[in-house]
Image (cartoon, rainbow, N blue to C red; front, side):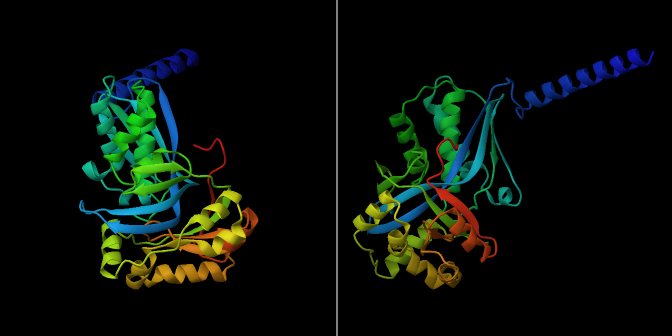
Amino acid sequence: MRGRALRARRAAGARRLRADRAGAARRGLVPVTRRTIRRGAHAKINVFLRVLAAREDGYHDLESLVVPISLADRITVRRAERLHVDVRGAPLAAEVPAGGLNLALVAALALADACPGAGGALVEIEKRIPVAAGLGGGSADAAATLLALNELWGCDLDPATLAHIAEGIGSDVPAMLAQGPVLVFGRGDRLAPAEVAPLWWVLVTFDFGVRSPDAYRWWDEEGGSRGPDPEPLLEAAAAGDAEALGPMLFNDLEGPVIARHPRVGEAKERLVAAGALGAVMSGSGSSVVGLARDRTHAEGVARRLDGAVVAAGPPPAGEG
């Protein structure tokens, strides 16, 4: 008797579960197939950033060494009735722009326009990269979304086509799409592969961001000082010579940002005082990264700083 009752309850529960899933699928919030694709969306750091000149289109030409690091968001995509982006991971998820300002959604819509086999999809982002921090989190999410949906929808678009789509999404997206160290030129749309040995970094982030247009405008207002020829820096990065590389890290946007946000400069000083071989602001800020000799050294530096995070860059092979 008890066995029949248990089987009846299980059957009723299964019917309710199927009904719940069917209703959610009609609303486009769950997948209509079981196929799931997951990708890492790796943050980046700028080992150097050199601003060359303002352009007529309002952007600036620049030169930078962009290196992905092990800190990463997680992107999961599944087919669904409609296109939908769901961001999770408190408290960072609340800071991610919604709608047309969300670069992952912009990427999905741009790919859908270029892919005959596109349809609906649920894009889930588990947020771990601080927002508006100079670490390329939104651009990383956009690049990972392009790669994942290209596979899910069977678009079979080649890297050159995906790179062209990425250029229209945001200046950092092509570099994030490359999934490895790159030298970036122009407004970020011209790339060249770069050799960078595995290095260890300590990240200090803040509860405020810096808008890229503001940082470049401040650079213009202050006369546009420019850093040195990066060739020796590139040689040290390729050789993995952290002792030589540390003092050569630089970012032309750093001075103007520090003048308005002194905490960025204080973070650089704290990193060096804690033992980092050198420190530099990443991108337009506000994050600051310090270079360490190895993982043990990086963890020792991080322990001396509240909230600091250790990351490998480039990430170990197979991550993503």
